[in-house]
Length: 233
Image (cartoon, rainbow, N blue to C red; front, side, top):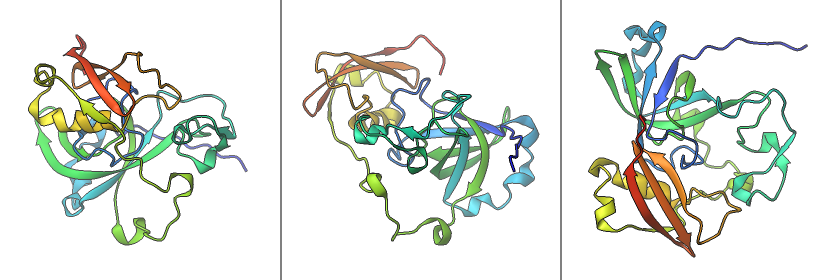
């Protein structure tokens, strides 16, 4: 029997990524990335956060709001496999799903009380662009959520850093000191689509109010320009 459920956005994440390009493809790959979970007014009751301080990690359940479609496909092409092999959608974490729902395990770096937004959560390792809607927050339970014997299928090996990042010192100085390691790690993961390998192509994405442009030759990523984006976020 078909059923439908109404879900409400309880919060939005405030991250350094104004667009999808550059966002790590899984949570936890760049622990240096910090973001804020800012709740909608009706969910800012302090009682809702009671006891959360006892947990080191959280599950964020969120929506692929930028890729939601009216229809779905039973197969997708995972970037991890170069975008050339089709697998069943339920064997992947593709955003193109029957329901555009995602989950990310993040580190809880702090619970803060603010004047304008009430209680906010500071998290590390999120893989979401700025403004992504959060549907729920749940504590991560090591005894239930960590299964060392689990098989990872085609993604059993972590997608670690693959590129060496080179940047002229005068450009690197354009990045705030606190965010340099996060940007370096994001670039070292190779944010390019897997099918694009042209060493002459200039890529770019927004990060923390900056526009970062780079080229990649062999296994070296060369930062060519870092400048203010001229946009908020």
